[in-house]
Amino acid sequence: MRLQEKGEINMHYDLTIIGSGPGGIFAAYEASRLNPNLKIAVFESGNELSKRTCPIDGLRIKSCINCKSCSIMNGFGGAGAFSDGKYNITNDFGGTLYEYIGRSKAIELMKYVDRINLEHGAQNVKLYSTSGSKFKKICLQNDLHLLDASVRHLGTDINYIVLNNIYNELKNKIDFYFNTTVEDVTFQNNTYTLKGNFDNTTSDKCIISVGRSGSSWMEKVCKNLNIQTKSNRVDLGVRVELPSEVFSHLTDDLYESKIVYRTKKYGDDVRTFCMNPKGSVVNENTNGIITVNGHSYEDPNLQTDNTNFALLVSKHFTSPFKDSNGYGESIAKLSNMLGGGVIVQRFGDLIRGQRSTYSRIENGFVSPTLSATPGDLSLVLPKRILDGIIEMIYALDKIAPGTANDDTLLYGIEVKFYNMEVELTENLETSLPGLFIIGDGSGVTHSLSHASASGVYVAKYLYERNA
Image (cartoon, rainbow, N blue to C red; front, side, top):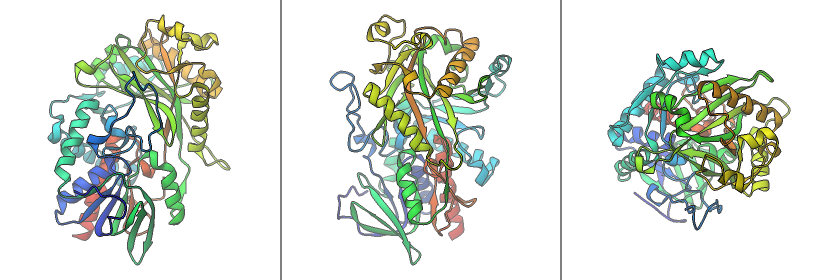
């Protein structure tokens, strides 16, 4: 294992991997397993797992201070390292990997990733499934649609253990370069050169797995290498926090329910996302913009009295507008400008057209798990999106009474940025031979399980092609 500083890297590798999120980790894991003699290097702009520490402690530091490298978003494990560790085994959501490698292969690889997680510390974690659930009928009776999936929820704590065990297994087989930013990738004479805050490094093959936080960088690299891309979507919405009892009949049975509702007013789809029973709402820093997310834990000592989940609306854009991420960033920046970070509002205040205040939130029946600025989300979110979210809350109130209570908290905004969708072959290879783009950075995957499976797929493909 190497943890070198600028000027110390000047080597040639069989395979370089940019990014150590789930895609990069599982690509490295599988490539080294299939060929132990392969010379592999992983470049990561953030810290190794043990050094990823967010300074927000809720007491001395209550909000994001814009660290040089966000420990929540960057480092070994990627943004998923401190997520609630949900691995959904499904083709119904989480990305379009199946469009490239086929439905059965995608499920097969997601199950393989699940087995690796079990072998590295998740052996006691339950696998939930919506198959045959009574709630599917209840949802349909209320014009809601429960998507099919099997989900193994590791929790932020077990997810950390799994990642740490995988890292300890890999660190003596692979060269890891942390706090090492790759600024550009060039291709000449069938060789890839990585340039950045280190001496140039070359490789025969290169896998890029930079995740959503690397969206701007990925776009620049594709432009420089003449790799075609097309605009992807952006997801906008809020994170809902309410007493855990309101959704307990669903979370106890399914853990996470992916529910979709089509609004009556505009015909837009609004969906639940990343449900965290007895979890906490957290800040997230993407390219200096503060948004909101949620975590949850398997350890009862770390659990709260609240459940949180996102309500998101996907926006796709057509010509002449192509910058979907820029659109999302502009709305998030407006929230940051008005609230100094994340804004929180009581649902009752939103419906009455009034800004929430510290006193109304303190006197409410839901105690916020994130220190956020009371405000008015109607001044931030576009009317069409906000109307859809309000419709969805009333629809959910039919299957989970209490969702539309006055004291239900809405944090904003939550944004899911997606990379421009890169033009790839069925093997996730670009137009340049030996350059692969995987994970959420490709615009193809949008989840831990899909990103991890894409890494395994490319590693297997390279091994079989060179066999």
